[in-house]
Structure formats: C-alpha cells, structure tokens
Image 1 (cartoon, helix red, strand yellow):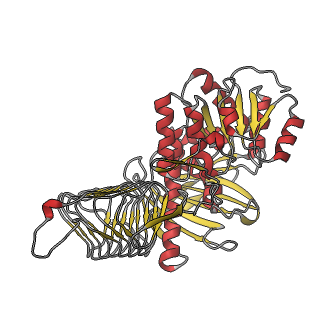
Image 2 (cartoon, one colour):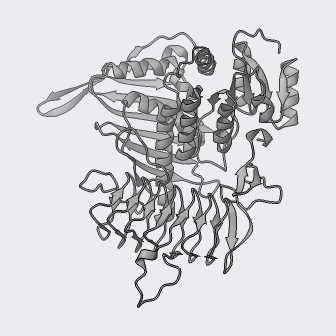
Amino acid sequence: MGQRETGPRVAVLGAGYWGRNLVRDFAGLGALGAVCDPDPAVRAAMSGAHPGLTVVSSPGEVFGDPGIAAVAIATPAPTHARLALAAMAAGKDVFVEKPLALSVADGEAMVAAARERGRILMVDHLLNRHPAYAELRKMAQAGAFGRVLRVWSRRHNFGRLRKDENVSWSFAPHDVAMILGIVGEAPTSVVATGASYLTEGVEDIVEASLGFPGGVTAHLSVSWLSPGKERRLAVIGTERMAVFDDGEPWEGKLIIYDHKVNWENQTPRAIKDEAGLRVPFSPLESLREQCRIFLGCVRTREAPPDSDGPEALAVMGVLLALDGALRASREAHGPGPVAASLGRGDRYDPGEAGPGRGLPPVPREDGSGHYAHPTAIVDGGARIGSGARIWQYSRVFADTEIGPGTSVGQNSAIGPGARVGAGCKIQNNVSVYKGVTLEDLVFCGPSMVFTNVLNPRAFIPRMGELKPTVVGFGATIGANATVVCGHNLGRFCLVGAGAVVTGDVPDHALMVGVPARRVGWVCRCGVRLPKSLTCPACGQGYREIRAGLAPRDAGDLVD
C-alpha cells in the first residue's frame, strides 16, 4: 500500500469527488486497506497512486475481507443506508459521508443496527472538528455570549450543481450541525423559501429560519449559484457577538466582538467594538482530524463525540422539515415561505413537514403537537402523533391511532379502531375503517376505497364479520383503487389507479386492472424495474423470494 499500517484497516467505498479525500487522509494515517469503486478509470488511478493497495469494484469483496475493520462510505446519498447496514452486518465499523440517510426510517435503522451489533457509526460532520467552531461552541455553552439570541450562517459558492438533491441537502448539513451544537436544543419550527432556476423542483437557493423552544432563532442561507465562495457563521448574544469566517486566514477565522447597547433617554445606542478580538489557532485539517478520531473510536470502542448516529438523525430531521416546507410551498402556491412543524423535545418527525398553504401548525390543547384544521373533528381517545396533520372536514374517531408525521387529506375518515403508522400520506376522500392497518410511510391516493366485509347487505348487520387488512411499509395505492378486505399488501408494492385488489399482494409488486394482477415489479423509490431487477434510477438491485422481492446483498451491487 505504500503506507505503514499502524492500526485498524479502513476500506473507502467510492473514490470520486469526496471519496478521494478520504483515501488521501486514511492513507496518510497509515490505515488505508482497500478502495472500492465501480469506475475502471478511478480504480486504475487508485492502483497507480497506491501500489499494492487492494482495489475492487464490488462492496462484497470488502465486506468479506476479515482484514478490513471498518469502511468509509462516500457513495451517493441514496446508497448510504443499505451499504452501512450491510457493512455492520458483516462486522465492520462505519464512517459515512453526510447526510446519514435520506429518510428517518433508514437513519433510525442504521442507528439501531450500530447499537444492537456494537458497531461504531460516525457521520462526516467535519466542521464539528474545526478548531474555530469548537472554540465558538465551547464559549456559547459556557455562557461567554450571555444569552444567545440568534445564530446565522451563509454557505454560498458557484458549482457542484446537482439534479437529484437540492442545495439544502448538499450544503446545509454542516451548518445545521453547527447551529444545533451552539443552541444545544432541538428546533420546533422551520420557515423556508427557495428558488429553482436550473432544474424544476430542485432548489438552487434556500433561505430558512429555525425557531427554538428557549427563544433562540437561527437563519441559514445556502446557494450554489453565487459569484464567490462564502462560509460564515455568526452568534449574537446579549453580552458579545462572534463571527466564524472560514474564508479568512487562520489568524482571522474567529473574531469576538464586545458590542454593547447603551440606553440613553429610553433610546438604544450601539457601542461598537470595531477591532474585535482575533482568536488564534494552529492550522488543522478538519477531515484528517475526523478520520483520526474515527480510527481512535474503532480502537477504543467509544462512541464518536458530536458526530454519532443520534446527532446525525437530529441534523437529518431539520433537513427533512426544511425539505417538506419547500415541497409544500411548491405544491400549494408556488414559491413562498411555508412553516414546518417538528416534534417536541429532541425527536424529529418522519416524512415531509409543513401543513402547506403558509399556515403554521396549530397544536391541540393536549400538547401533542399535531395540527388539525378548525373544520376537522378529532374524538377524545384518538391517539395522534406529533407533527401529524388533519385537514378540512376530516374525522378521526375514538380508539384510532395515527403515527407522527402522517397527513390526512380533506373529507377523510379514520377509524374507529384503525391503525395508521408514521409518515403516511392519506389523500382526500379516503376512509380507513376498523380492521385496517397502515404500516409506516403508506400512500393512499384520492378516493381509494377499503372495504370491511366481503358480502355486505344493507338489511343484514355484519360489523362482527370484519376482515382485517394490512398495508405494508412504504406501499402505494393509487387514486380510485379498491382493496377488498381480508388481504395483505406487501412492502413497497404499488397498486395502480382504479385497480381492484382481490388477493394478497407480494412485496414490490406492480398491480393493475380489475381484478388486479401483477404486471411487474417496482423499486422502493417507485420506479418500475427492468428484467435485471436493478433500478435504473437509484441503482438498488433485487432478487425474487417467496414474499415477492428482496434487496440483493449489498455485495452483489455496483454502486
């Protein structure tokens, strides 16, 4: 490998734009054990730069190597969860590039797997290691700024344009992590606005404001369509202010200002500290330090400070709420600010956030944190999760359970006795009867129908003959479809508009017609699969099993 091995060996999965930096730093620390990349040109370059290094195209070759203790994942974000889960199942510790994952379900599965298997899971929030930010956070936590009133950040540049994720997912994770570290609590609201100039529905510029329970507000601005690079973070307190400017030389990266406000004749007057105090630091390469800390955690089996799975979930929760507000704004009335509701405490709601139409969420008097339109009726005894939204003229009956983050559209009825999971989206004019269970992240299209008995007669009461129906995790049921009771719909299946389901549906099945029949398979991302059973959109591969489809072992995939 051309490097002296000093401890655990790490394999880097993905040696592209960012992965090559991880290759450089793990090699510099004497810990680079292998590189995996599907591109032959990249593999050739890695072999030339690191003679003797193991260079492969399949992650399975890395996961099966007992000499590799850990992996660093720098592949596209949609692949993070499955690669990390496969690596931990193979007994490897995991360092993953931000974001942790693209859904709360995947992120929580990664955190749970790390806990259950005793694996290290560290996320590349590398600015947590920057000495200027570390000092800024320490000062804020020690009360050096008095009471923190506001935090703002700006991350602008030109380039690194994306079509599969907006600028908030690309640029904002570092800023959100820093803001949460300084404030020390979870936000309860997000207001966001954005603009898409290059690709419809993919924001190139995003402005967002966060509200915190203690009264602190934060603002972040991200753009990849700016004439120059700007990376600044400011803290405004009652006693002092500070600016962390990563574009400045080391001696000017962190400046503390003793600005004061004097009151003269009941009028505030600003007393400026023009020069400020420059806080000196020794130069430190944050990514190298991040890699060094990860290797130390692998050796000691101690959780990484400030960049573990729960911290990454908190950051991802803010990004999902922000993304939900932007999406709701586009769907409701075009560009404009929309408020998004987050769960109380330090847990974030799954699924999209924001009630749309620019209305802030209105918590019920019981403090549950869900939103119900004034025309909606929610019976006593209904259990509704934080961040759920019940829209116009809908009814939620007693003894009904609705999970956090779920949206119930206009003129819908849920229950009594129905069970609806987290992050579901129930469109207008849908009734979910007793005996129906929707697992997490189920989509029910407008005016689709669940039946509850097989042979109804108006003159014969048959409520004691209800047949249970279970709709699996991530399934989609199209508009005006009918699901005959007593059948189970598999995970991630897709029932076409107007279809009539009269039997059990396999996982990932694509069902159309009357009666519905399987005409193909769909990926978990909703794209129809070709004969190869490898998704052309996200790259996920599948294999047929008795229940339908299951993801191929990550070692069989080319990422």
